[in-house]
Image 1: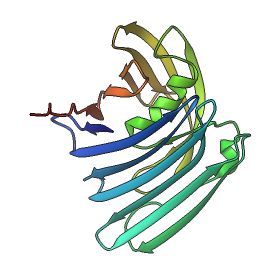
Image 2 (image 1 turned 180 degrees about the vertical axis):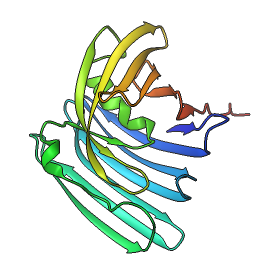
Image 3 (image 1 turned 180 degrees about the horizontal axis):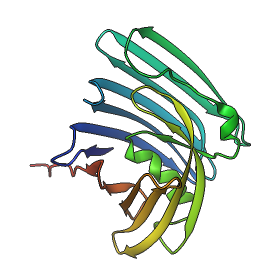
Length: 203
Protein backbone atom coordinates (compact mmCIF):
# COMPACT_ATOMS: atom_id res chain seq x y z
CA UNK A 1 0.00 0.00 0.00
CA UNK A 2 1.31 3.43 -1.00
CA UNK A 3 0.08 6.69 0.52
CA UNK A 4 0.71 10.25 -0.65
CA UNK A 5 -0.23 13.57 0.92
CA UNK A 6 -0.02 17.13 -0.34
CA UNK A 7 2.93 19.02 1.19
CA UNK A 8 2.45 22.11 3.38
CA UNK A 9 1.28 25.20 1.51
CA UNK A 10 -0.82 23.29 -1.04
CA UNK A 11 -4.54 22.48 -0.93
CA UNK A 12 -5.02 19.45 1.31
CA UNK A 13 -5.26 16.10 -0.49
CA UNK A 14 -4.48 12.47 0.34
CA UNK A 15 -4.18 9.44 -1.95
CA UNK A 16 -3.78 5.76 -1.25
CA UNK A 17 -3.11 2.90 -3.68
CA UNK A 18 -3.10 -0.83 -3.08
CA UNK A 19 -0.93 -2.27 -5.86
CA UNK A 20 -0.68 -5.87 -7.06
CA UNK A 21 2.37 -5.96 -9.39
CA UNK A 22 2.73 -8.73 -11.97
CA UNK A 23 5.47 -9.41 -14.54
CA UNK A 24 5.03 -6.58 -17.04
CA UNK A 25 1.72 -5.43 -15.60
CA UNK A 26 -0.11 -4.31 -12.49
CA UNK A 27 -3.53 -4.09 -10.94
CA UNK A 28 -4.35 -1.44 -8.39
CA UNK A 29 -7.18 0.13 -6.45
CA UNK A 30 -7.10 3.46 -4.69
CA UNK A 31 -8.84 6.30 -2.92
CA UNK A 32 -8.42 10.07 -3.07
CA UNK A 33 -9.86 12.84 -0.93
CA UNK A 34 -9.54 16.46 -2.04
CA UNK A 35 -10.93 19.91 -1.28
CA UNK A 36 -10.50 21.76 -4.58
CA UNK A 37 -12.21 22.88 -6.74
CA UNK A 38 -14.80 21.57 -4.25
CA UNK A 39 -14.75 18.85 -1.59
CA UNK A 40 -14.91 15.31 -3.01
CA UNK A 41 -14.06 11.69 -2.33
CA UNK A 42 -12.93 9.42 -5.14
CA UNK A 43 -12.26 5.70 -5.61
CA UNK A 44 -10.63 4.04 -8.60
CA UNK A 45 -9.62 0.64 -9.97
CA UNK A 46 -6.93 0.12 -12.62
CA UNK A 47 -5.92 -2.91 -14.69
CA UNK A 48 -3.01 -3.05 -17.13
CA UNK A 49 -1.61 -5.72 -19.44
CA UNK A 50 1.95 -6.22 -20.71
CA UNK A 51 3.91 -4.03 -21.12
CA UNK A 52 2.09 -1.88 -18.53
CA UNK A 53 -0.60 -0.84 -21.04
CA UNK A 54 -3.92 0.37 -19.60
CA UNK A 55 -6.85 -1.95 -20.21
CA UNK A 56 -9.42 -0.63 -17.73
CA UNK A 57 -9.82 2.35 -15.43
CA UNK A 58 -12.98 2.79 -13.38
CA UNK A 59 -13.45 5.93 -11.27
CA UNK A 60 -16.24 6.82 -8.84
CA UNK A 61 -16.42 10.32 -7.33
CA UNK A 62 -18.93 12.00 -5.07
CA UNK A 63 -19.50 15.22 -3.17
CA UNK A 64 -22.36 16.89 -1.38
CA UNK A 65 -25.58 15.93 -3.23
CA UNK A 66 -23.79 14.74 -6.40
CA UNK A 67 -21.89 11.77 -7.78
CA UNK A 68 -20.54 10.50 -11.10
CA UNK A 69 -18.59 7.55 -12.46
CA UNK A 70 -16.41 6.75 -15.47
CA UNK A 71 -15.58 3.31 -16.85
CA UNK A 72 -12.77 3.68 -19.41
CA UNK A 73 -11.59 0.68 -21.45
CA UNK A 74 -8.78 0.16 -23.97
CA UNK A 75 -8.48 -2.82 -26.30
CA UNK A 76 -4.66 -2.64 -26.25
CA UNK A 77 -4.56 -1.72 -29.95
CA UNK A 78 -5.67 1.93 -29.87
CA UNK A 79 -9.43 1.80 -29.41
CA UNK A 80 -10.81 3.50 -26.27
CA UNK A 81 -14.40 3.50 -25.00
CA UNK A 82 -16.13 4.83 -21.92
CA UNK A 83 -19.41 4.77 -20.02
CA UNK A 84 -20.45 7.49 -17.60
CA UNK A 85 -23.16 7.86 -14.98
CA UNK A 86 -24.23 11.04 -13.18
CA UNK A 87 -26.48 11.85 -10.24
CA UNK A 88 -27.29 15.22 -8.71
CA UNK A 89 -26.26 18.67 -9.92
CA UNK A 90 -22.82 20.22 -9.58
CA UNK A 91 -21.00 23.06 -11.34
CA UNK A 92 -18.40 20.90 -13.12
CA UNK A 93 -17.73 20.08 -16.80
CA UNK A 94 -19.41 16.97 -18.17
CA UNK A 95 -17.48 13.68 -17.84
CA UNK A 96 -16.13 11.76 -20.83
CA UNK A 97 -14.83 13.22 -24.08
CA UNK A 98 -13.66 12.50 -27.63
CA UNK A 99 -12.07 9.04 -27.66
CA UNK A 100 -11.11 9.33 -31.35
CA UNK A 101 -8.27 11.62 -30.22
CA UNK A 102 -6.83 8.79 -28.09
CA UNK A 103 -5.93 6.35 -30.88
CA UNK A 104 -2.19 6.40 -30.14
CA UNK A 105 -2.53 6.39 -26.35
CA UNK A 106 -1.36 3.39 -24.32
CA UNK A 107 -1.85 4.82 -20.85
CA UNK A 108 -4.44 6.49 -18.73
CA UNK A 109 -3.36 9.30 -16.41
CA UNK A 110 -5.74 9.92 -13.54
CA UNK A 111 -5.53 13.54 -12.45
CA UNK A 112 -3.83 14.20 -9.10
CA UNK A 113 -2.98 10.50 -8.71
CA UNK A 114 0.79 9.75 -8.47
CA UNK A 115 0.28 6.03 -9.13
CA UNK A 116 -0.58 6.47 -12.81
CA UNK A 117 2.82 8.03 -13.55
CA UNK A 118 4.32 4.59 -12.96
CA UNK A 119 3.31 2.84 -16.20
CA UNK A 120 5.39 4.87 -18.73
CA UNK A 121 8.35 4.91 -16.33
CA UNK A 122 8.35 1.11 -16.05
CA UNK A 123 7.67 0.43 -19.74
CA UNK A 124 10.80 2.33 -20.78
CA UNK A 125 12.80 1.63 -17.59
CA UNK A 126 13.32 5.33 -17.00
CA UNK A 127 13.88 4.58 -13.31
CA UNK A 128 17.06 2.63 -14.14
CA UNK A 129 18.82 4.43 -16.99
CA UNK A 130 18.92 7.26 -19.53
CA UNK A 131 16.09 7.89 -21.93
CA UNK A 132 13.41 10.33 -23.03
CA UNK A 133 9.97 9.27 -24.25
CA UNK A 134 6.96 11.18 -25.53
CA UNK A 135 3.49 9.77 -24.90
CA UNK A 136 -0.11 10.48 -25.71
CA UNK A 137 -2.17 9.95 -22.56
CA UNK A 138 -5.86 9.45 -21.85
CA UNK A 139 -5.85 12.06 -19.09
CA UNK A 140 -8.82 11.94 -16.71
CA UNK A 141 -9.54 15.27 -15.04
CA UNK A 142 -10.51 15.18 -11.36
CA UNK A 143 -13.12 15.58 -9.99
CA UNK A 144 -15.18 16.17 -13.17
CA UNK A 145 -13.90 12.98 -14.95
CA UNK A 146 -13.39 14.55 -18.36
CA UNK A 147 -11.23 12.43 -20.68
CA UNK A 148 -8.66 14.48 -22.61
CA UNK A 149 -5.89 13.52 -25.05
CA UNK A 150 -2.69 14.95 -23.56
CA UNK A 151 0.87 14.82 -24.87
CA UNK A 152 3.44 14.19 -22.15
CA UNK A 153 7.21 13.68 -21.95
CA UNK A 154 9.12 11.55 -19.45
CA UNK A 155 12.90 12.04 -19.20
CA UNK A 156 15.39 10.20 -16.97
CA UNK A 157 17.53 12.74 -15.11
CA UNK A 158 19.69 10.67 -12.75
CA UNK A 159 19.63 7.52 -10.64
CA UNK A 160 20.97 6.34 -7.30
CA UNK A 161 20.80 3.23 -5.10
CA UNK A 162 17.27 4.01 -3.92
CA UNK A 163 15.65 5.19 -7.15
CA UNK A 164 15.81 7.98 -9.68
CA UNK A 165 14.57 11.38 -10.79
CA UNK A 166 12.36 11.54 -13.87
CA UNK A 167 11.23 14.81 -15.43
CA UNK A 168 7.56 14.91 -16.38
CA UNK A 169 6.32 17.63 -18.75
CA UNK A 170 3.20 18.43 -20.71
CA UNK A 171 4.18 18.82 -24.35
CA UNK A 172 2.21 22.06 -24.62
CA UNK A 173 4.66 23.63 -22.15
CA UNK A 174 2.09 24.29 -19.41
CA UNK A 175 3.60 22.10 -16.68
CA UNK A 176 6.89 20.46 -15.66
CA UNK A 177 7.85 18.53 -12.52
CA UNK A 178 10.93 16.52 -11.56
CA UNK A 179 9.54 13.35 -9.99
CA UNK A 180 11.48 11.25 -7.50
CA UNK A 181 10.71 7.55 -7.95
CA UNK A 182 11.81 4.55 -5.91
CA UNK A 183 13.71 1.51 -7.21
CA UNK A 184 10.41 -0.04 -8.34
CA UNK A 185 9.35 3.04 -10.35
CA UNK A 186 6.67 4.32 -7.94
CA UNK A 187 6.51 8.05 -7.18
CA UNK A 188 8.04 9.17 -3.89
CA UNK A 189 7.88 12.94 -4.44
CA UNK A 190 5.77 14.81 -6.99
CA UNK A 191 6.61 18.52 -6.51
CA UNK A 192 3.51 20.66 -6.51
CA UNK A 193 1.22 17.71 -5.84
CA UNK A 194 2.16 15.06 -3.28
CA UNK A 195 4.82 13.25 -1.25
CA UNK A 196 4.85 9.64 -0.12
CA UNK A 197 4.04 9.16 3.55
CA UNK A 198 6.19 6.58 5.30
CA UNK A 199 4.37 4.18 7.64
CA UNK A 200 5.14 4.51 11.32
CA UNK A 201 7.33 1.67 12.63
CA UNK A 202 5.52 -0.99 14.65
CA UNK A 203 6.01 -0.77 18.40
